[in-house]
Picture 1 (cartoon, rainbow, N blue to C red):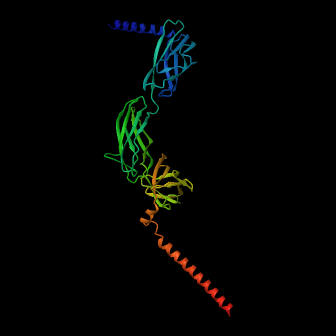
Picture 2 (tube, rainbow, N blue to C red):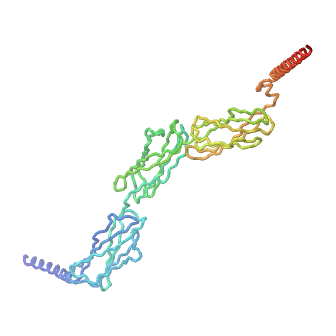
Picture 3 (cartoon, helix red, strand yellow):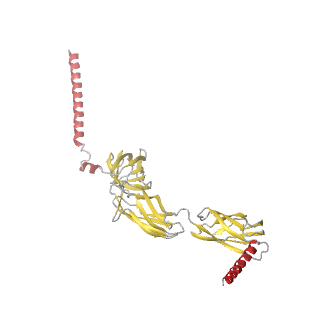
Amino acid sequence: MRQELLNLLIIVLLTGIIPMAAYADSPSINIIPQRYEPSPAQPGEYLSVWINVENIGNEKAENLLVVLIPTYPFFLDEGENATIEIKTLEGMDNSVIKYKVRIAADAVEGENELIIKYSTKDRNIWVEKKLRITIQTLDANLAITGVESREVSPGEITNLKIKLKNEADSYLRDVNIKLNISGSTFLPINSTEDRKIYLIGSKEEKTADFDLLVSPNAECGPYKILTYISYYDSAGVYYTKTNYVTLIVTAEPEITVNIDESGILTAGQTGIVSLNIINKGLMDLKFLTISLKPDGYEILSPSEVYIGALDSDDYDTVDFKIHTTENGKELPLKIELVYKDANNKEYLDKYVVNLRLYTQEELKNYNIVPDTTGTTNAIIFIILLFVGYWLCKKLKKSSYFSSKKDK
């Protein structure tokens, strides 16, 4: 029994040694990926791949061909050779070859296969190998693609929408958007100043909404709000970034123009007309110019006056010297105002202010000009007294000379 077992063991060993010897006496090719850079590979970038081609047999391999078969997302630039020939590879020797591969810009994150095949001189047998290349976006980018809000006045509520897009090839999670509005012009309504989004898929867009109250004391103009965004990518890497969004606080201008004082009472007169320009709105104005357009009157002073800044709840006065040429009870003064608001929006406003003209009878009846009859009579009386005094004096002088002559 023992002899039979021993014979069986010898047979098994012999049958194993014979193929090993035969295997060792012929070329045996093996392809092993040595490394690739960068790792992980990145979409839209180049990838360098080093392949270790080894002959683990004792017999040399001749005319060995190694061929790269690029399939999406891999491809070779023009001029890059996919076939590399190794003339001779001795037994128990190796050769390292290198390929420069481009990765498609829209490559999907994860493991992708790079195919290589090889054959020896007879070309009857081709062996294919699949190399696994990990592709990952370098930065899991979450971008603000749009901001929606309307122009709002002090004391009003506005809705702010921030649109976010996941530019990465994998999902992003636990996205937090926070507005830095503490102690500012804006106050959150019915909520806090931050929003959370649990998950945003690859290339997906989502919107964060904020209801904000503008302080009643806010000055008009653009406001930049610092926004903090934090999130995790699919691999658990934590990201933070900051952006600015802009809100515009504005108000409709409210200007009135009145006649403050006039030196013209009747048609045909020349005098100074003073105009009041009052800013009754919530917004300060700048680069304000007032113009008077001639129509039924002549302008004897400059027809355009530059005022400059006119703050909210303030006024300025401008004088024009004119000569009236038309009769009537009212003289329409045509006025134009050109100015800009705090957001540099330009305005052109037109006004018509009526200048009241009076007849002589109305001036007398309304006691606008005092009755001059008494004054005229007094002047005449004084003149008469002067003439009488002069005549008396002359007569008295004539009588004196006559009496002297008689003597």
